[in-house]
Image 1 (tube, one colour):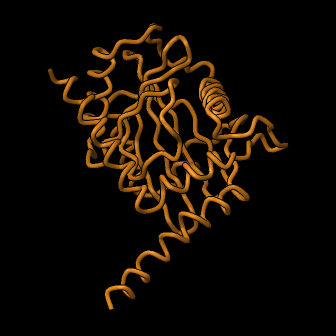
Image 2 (cartoon, rainbow, N blue to C red):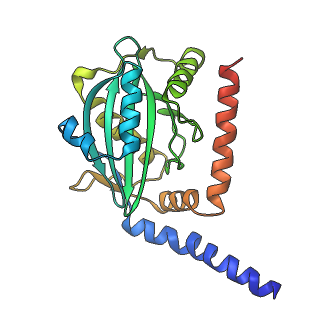
Image 3 (cartoon, one colour):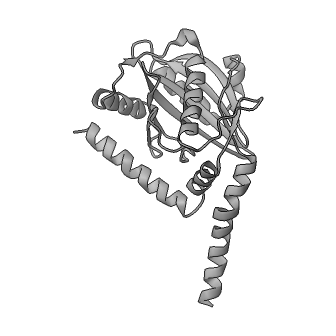
Length: 246
């Protein structure tokens, strides 16, 4: 009976972790070169859910100013987002709703851009990023924090404490989405250098994964790897936040 139970439990896990990467390798594509089209904010906001609208109000209360709204489609999801900047602080903010079939998640992200194109961000996305850790981005995920004031304050503390070889710069709101487009391109290029993506870019501005990339993406989003990566990220976040309060 115990052996049967082990088979019932292990076979689906093995199938996901062995067959899953092959399916991901064939179907998944990573954005490499994108161009965002701005949409009317009132019309955009009317189509978003109540959570998005409440977060928009919170950002306005923190004096963030709307820059633009757009969408980023990928192989299996569509991300609708609004970009904001703070007139007195260097930080930018983003509200994102990711939709995949009937599943929809909404989160907020505060970002500090640096002169070398790298960035620091603090967000409360409920799911792990599928990407590996890269030099161009230092991120802190605080899934249990719903207060945008607290997330913003965390970004400010980390920005003041963490060293960076390049100076922090305000988000250039007059450039619209171009800094985001440039960062997506840089991130994709780093994935190529790290061996997760192929260098070729298709007609839709996307890159195919390598086998290494497909394995990593699958194992980071499937059990038991998901648990392991989540624990590692939680430890990383605790260490950074502990230092920011010292």
